[in-house]
Image (cartoon, rainbow over the protein chains, first blue to last red):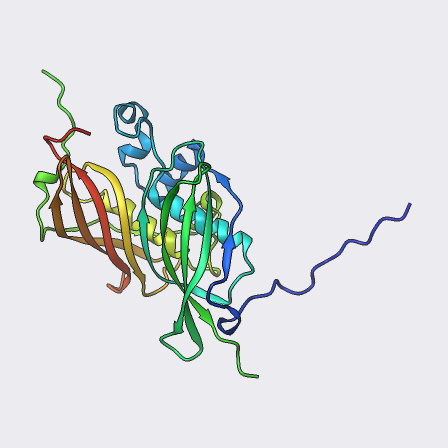
Length: 160
Length: 140
């Protein structure tokens, strides 16, 4: 029996330059279930031990009824989810964000993110532009848990 | 002796214009690796911390000021700018100033301006955090 030759990707994955990104493009990520472990680890990494994330007994008496995830954990998870799923931009990093935490993320909730390119403008230097993505983070019931905009600095195609 | 609750800061005790500065912390490769593992949000390049990790550290440091902790019911929003990269090995601290307090029926909104500052005094990231804070007399 002949085995198929493994296919090796010899070139790095495509990176999209500023010129190639179009207004109105949309992206949707896979889901991810947020666990108690995620919250405990994020408290450890960030140093944010606020009782709303860490005191199960106190939170039983709160309006939420249980511990909730850090808003910034949700923000970081959606960033990771979307990056995993879209063809990467030739990104020089995030320049800013305007973000709202609309509903709590509870242990066991599964979140995903939808995004749309809503803005493109010149960057502070001529070799880059700013792409604005409007993002909506949804839970398993389709409720919006977080939403906002991120501004990403993206390289222009180098002159050849 | 009767047990007493740990001191906290309710909405009524928040003072507009008050400033706070946190202790500093050295950011290591371990922070970057743990953060990337937990969140799936990777570093843009070797030696640079993911910008949202820096934002997370800024909120974590914010709990280490001299004032008893704010009774935050919910983090409502962020308006944030990233000016410079945070490099592994940098030592950062956070500065904040209370800009706005707005009372509502059972709680209040507090807006703070935060800056994440490195060992050279350069501001790496800055912006506004909006919190919903409990009132001492409020029902939650």
